[in-house]
Length: 395
Ligand SMILES: *Cc1c(COP(=O)(O)O)cnc(C)c1O
Image (cartoon, rainbow, N blue to C red; front, side, top):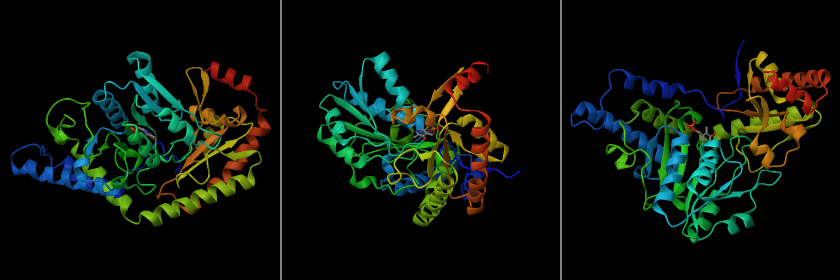
């Protein structure tokens, strides 16, 4: 059975070009970029090429890019650096819909380190209230950490505008742009964003590589303390294959950027209309305009997400749900909850996330199969929370 992969916000396949670019760095090109000899120097040159490509994709300069182990490390590095360099400021401004990499770090900083976290709310479209944003950022704010695009709904936040507000109060601005990079145009050159996190495996590069953009002139305190790698901003011998792969992935993303993202958006829109036409009591979660071109989150009412996923899996379709039957209790998505999505729709919410590797035929197949699955499930079990909680408890 063919796999139809519509879970690209969870991870992506490594692009063929990326795989080919990396291969020699696992065999003959194994030098250490810090070595004095030319064998290492040749590798250092390839790391520099990758840094330039990454910078170009972001509208940044190569000196502003530090390679890390991924999105999570970049998020931690940025936020902890800001707190270290502005020690007299004790407040963090973030949103209720961040990825756990930011959300749980902020919870920890509040619980164990005595920081005050101002949690920004979102409306039913998943959008921020700019008045609340303005009121929350003050002279006590060390760091404003707001994601560029949401991984569950694809909703895009006006982080460039928010960075102006942060700068006017002397606060630093960080954005988790893991889902935005490669999908929407980014030009950091003309913003007040101090830190931006990205991750390789959401961008057709391997897992375990990422980058942190640090705006020129931003005071910085390293997270990984060790050798002088990465301009003394991150100790540790470089993940050379990962870095080379990430640089190549940046070039792949830049090639036909508009055409590819437009094609992905057309497939996403076709999927959205196709499903809404065929399934009653279904709704899009998140603003349909201010949204990534590849993401579609639909709440199917009166049906359970895990059950939909299992039956889609039987057809080779990979997607993800808005809730997880974890640790014996059903935990609805914190993002959909923050948006006030009704419980009956949270539990039946499915995220489809596309990439340039999807085809129109695949989308037609999903439009064909998904409604049948929903009908069968709705016929089988009248949805009620008690049933689901009981099902979770016995696992
Ligand atoms: C995947 C993801 C991360 C984490 O990145 P890793 O490289 O897996 O650590 C952080 N933020 C967002 C928005 C993500 O989607």
